[in-house]
Amino acid sequence: TGPDEADEAVRGTCEDASVCKRFAVSVGYWKDPYIQHFVRQAKERKAPEINRGYYARVHGVSYLIKAFLQKTQCNSQIVNLGAGMDTLFWRLKDENLLPRKYFEVDFPMIVARKIHNIKSKPPLSKPIMESHSGDSLLIDSHSLDSSRYSIVGADLRSSSDLEEKLRKHSLDIHLPTLLVAECVLVYMTPQQSASLLKWAASTFPVAMVINYEQVNMRDRFGQIMIENLQRRHCNLAGVELCSSLDSQRERLLGSGWDNAHAVDMMKVYSFLPQADVKRIEALEFLDEKELFEQLMQHYCICWASKDSSDLGLANIDF
Ligand code: SAM
Image (cartoon, rainbow, N blue to C red; front, side):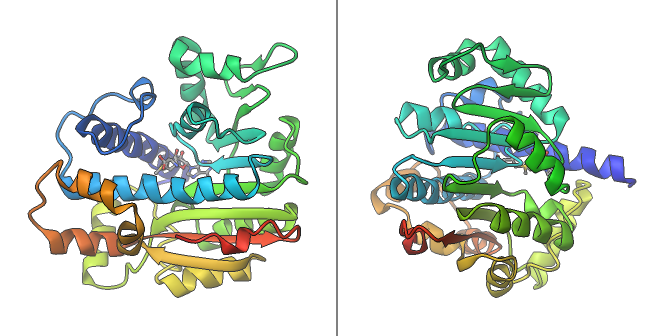
């Protein structure tokens, strides 16, 4: 596959992630009234372990995001890197938890699709208008900029281009900033993701980063998973380097972050509110408990912060 085809395959993963999320939502794993406006319903049922995995992913990531918003009292900004069709902006608004500004970045082609959905669906556009104040908001086919929500088309492999575009949309590097990369860094080479992480650590004096991705891919089970993913033409360039939780932490520390943490998704699952876990475990019968546990051990959430203002970001944990 050439570079364009590889990028095209990576863009396809955004559809996959959201279709899986929509399916899990339709079964009742969590509530998300917005995802239906971004992707079609899955043609086939997804396996219970996939749905549970997405439940842990969505809850684990949003748990850390909310902890950041609490520490900064929403006087902060979020930059969602490779956001795809993510609906977090709308869900945070419903919960009255919007930061000062919420940015999303993805390939221009994905951004164009997202903007098209926003423009044509009032349940998506209304919350943006409601949270907007001042002059009329700026919108064209590849970017949208309002007071609280902004989306830009950029390639994350070029930090300078990324920074320039975000600054045009009023990014304030002096505000506490949370960068989220949910299943994104793994599509870049180790050099590219390291340079993105370094850019973030050196640009924002007070910041936190959350990264969800594959880990522990070296054993036989991991090999099988990688082969399956590659068969679907995914360019999982970053898997090789980040083969363990330790190397995930080291990558963050080596990129200029302090207080790096990394936990596999089985740990995250065990930390989630047990009443809710009980509820979702009753939704679908899961035959292969062991398979589920293995699957969960091959994904992780890592996070790190740098906190010169002593907001307590270093204490954020499950
Ligand atoms: N974060 C979303 C989620 O978890 O639902 C989407 C995840 S999807 C697996 C990966 C996303 O990262 C895709 O939307 C893809 O277009 C984006 N992406 C990957 N590499 C990128 C790059 N170099 N520049 C911009 N976006 C990129």
